[in-house]
Length: 156
Image (cartoon, rainbow, N blue to C red; front, side, top):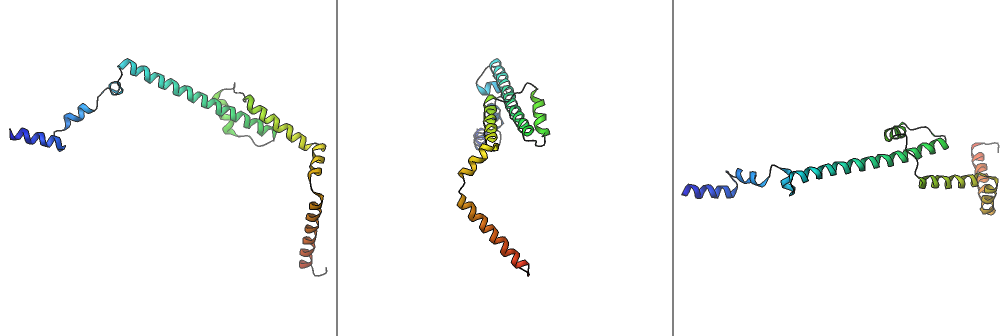
């Protein structure tokens, strides 16, 4: 009787003989831990895997679209090609197109640049400039160059 009292006290303290509780606390079946039947748990796992694969595919497609846009911009501005972008496009497949929204943004930027590059655009920029400010900057630069030249050259 004293032995059973002592052993129950020791079990309560966790010093020994508590192996039975740990086996009961952790079920061997993950479905039982989630509160589902085996079939429900397997179906749930399939759905989780399918959703993850779908998200990954969408993410890869978006990355490929961005890479396609970068390739287009590199071609437009004659910048060096990126192997990383080309690899991304190949991984996603050749059916990757640039999203329409991004194309609209690029086209708007292109038209703005064309307007700035034209003669009329340059004339408008001249009208927006303050001529007095330009004259002051030019005179200040000229006097600065003269003073530096006088310091370096003893003839002047």
